[in-house]
Image (cartoon, rainbow, N blue to C red; front, side):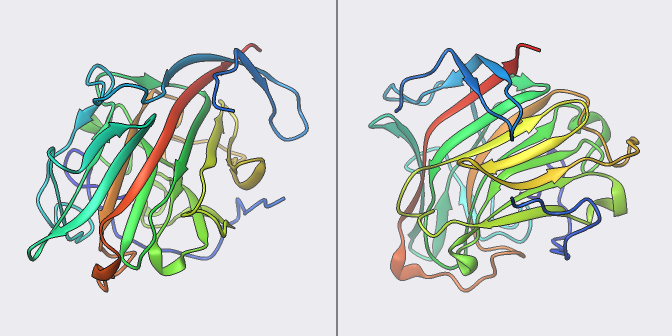
Length: 273
């Protein structure tokens, strides 16, 4: 997702895969999980939100309110009431049309929960419909000081309705002034019909993105600099559902609204090694 000021706006440019390349290759919480490619690594759960209550836990999350056009020429108004709910064990963010206005929800963990390195996993079911843009992502904690894209951005999952069966994973940084994207994509035909796990493995050398057990993208610059590797600091979490904008376009399928982004859980693990 793109941002301005506090989450500063950027130009949407989807470019061909860069030199860092695309490498495609039970709801109880486990105490440890072992898996990263073919290397066995033990992971300890250090934080999660299972969304098992009846209201959003504001010790973990902030609700962001914003007007249309705040970022990326998006059409929605982000509001607190009627768009964000916790029910049936999931966070539910609803995008809907009210009169001539689009309403939706956005939350973040800035100042409340932040993490550096580890395994970050969302289990989510995505909305469908042209013009919708759900995202599960992270921004560097130093955004207030250095701005975007210098703070870095980690998009664990993005989806746009015009490519219904494709999900994307992306990193953003100062390289090419934030306009050049290092990204991968994966076909997920049931993205809007079933829950899937969207996972990022992040350490001091490499960042890998998975959908369920399939690797969709790896980012590992051989020479790390401030411009291409701002990922040596804490990041905070963001969950939102945008309507319209530079990437998904402005042809909204109103007849399919309301639509929901459902998040079963967010879990953060750290390696034992």
